[in-house]
Image 1 (cartoon, rainbow, N blue to C red):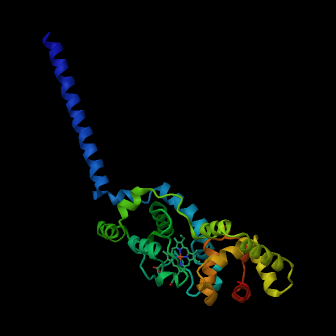
Image 2 (image 1 turned 180 degrees about the vertical axis):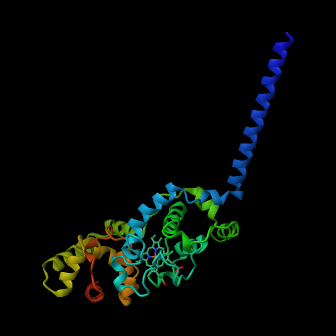
Length: 274
Ligand code: HEC
């Protein structure tokens, strides 16, 4: 009888110890949710994060920074300053620290004027993955992440909240331009279609270049006509606009190998049309 009592007692003790553990884990989770988040864990360069970053990089950044991040993407020839080479520590404006790179993706460099746009429309988790991938390219030039810089990012950009929000399907500028076209009145749509037909038949050197550069003339014209018109006044802005959403904006990888002169020709032609 006494033995059975002891067994129950032992089981009870084990149970309450377990319950204590569970409570502790819950408290930790709660603290995390309340903003005491373990940011270091959330931004850790896990193999999954690096892998996700690599795929995002090929889709969003390689047109300028090159498939291997060497700063020699398709659009690089026409850009000045050149896209950063991620294998060397030269001339970084916001620095190679994690926080400097995060700032770049939040704000762009010089408000995007230099050719480097902000990517704040991407979910924070994707931006972290991109940074983790880039930093994996040459560990020698990227210092480890410190608590202090993460705290600063949390203050400046609400990082822990952004990371837990799991923002999805944020409209990107190209999608907005295409949506606008769909909503537009029939005469405006007709205008773009007519313009595209004109380009398709023209033997003008500019039209030939445009046909080389675009696999969907109407789509490219739509995107250009709805974009911030600053691209008309600046070759850099134009290259940035075309290269940033390459593939989705009607422009094709046919711009591969475009020389600086060809970019200029394309720019001159398109700004005269729109
Ligand atoms: C349209 C071309 C273009 C695209 C697309 C592009 N970049 Fe850039 N990027 C640039 C240029 C140009 C610079 C150099 C800016 C300068 O020196 O003023 C740059 C610089 C940078 C820098 C260095 C900033 C510093 O501190 O000097 C980082 C980091 C960066 N880009 C990340 C990315 C990532 C990540 C992507 C994809 C999400 C991306 N870029 C897409 C053109 C581009």
